[in-house]
Image 1 (cartoon, helix red, strand yellow):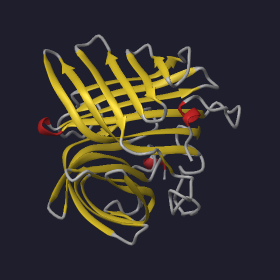
Image 2 (cartoon, one colour):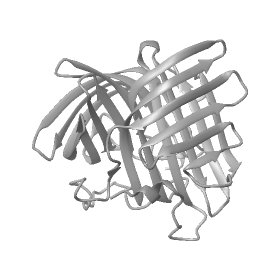
Image 3 (cartoon, helix red, strand yellow):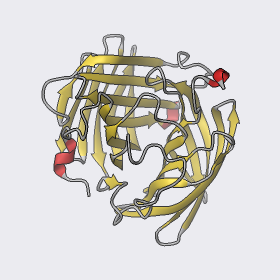
Image 4 (cartoon, one colour):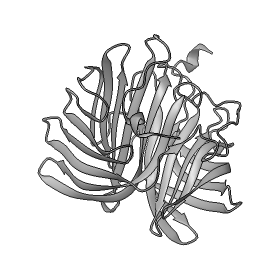
Length: 318
């Protein structure tokens, strides 16, 4: 179970330099096909922070052909704690209600700024709590994150409201999206072969999944390792999931997904990317990030896909 004090820095379980904590907030403006990702990764044993502010609005095959990208690998660790901090890149995050609500601001001095509030729509979903997650105790081959980078981890659906300004144009933000928080040993080569995604539908329903990716068959998601279905204020853990993906290289073109929750209810939904771009949040991690328009039995939804589908950056050495 996630407790209020989990919004603060955790005492490292090791003095190894790779110990890290993370905050990620994603949101979007569906009518403009704009996706925004706000990421911070403090490494308290090193006294440094990685932070990425990224905005995409189309399709590209390189990480640099996007609307806006401001990624800093080595920022100084700020004073204070994770409930209220400010980074040297212009990012400010303040928790206004423990583990539920946040005020997120950013101004990098380049004509791009944001001021949004995130309001949790559910209790944080603890992937290691068997009372929440029926797969909490599962040991799945190929899962390289649950016991290391995600040794502590929650996912949560929430409503994001506020404004995004790009040059002289200000957009209104009002969407349902996902945030997460993690803590554990996070080696820079470790994260691979999994997909973190969410679909948020017009009937006040969200589906959030962490799928395994098969590096030898990138057209399928063989299984799910964690996830939930939110229906209003009720949350149901996922016990099974599979998927099919059509790609252009690594980039997404179409999803056909199926999940089954603890009630035995099966949810089949499809997704078409409105944006799809590579993202290198740090030099040795490669993923594809997309904003998708989803459909589930005639109900439309929107949400984000982060697909760590490239197993290594040194393929030619094999």
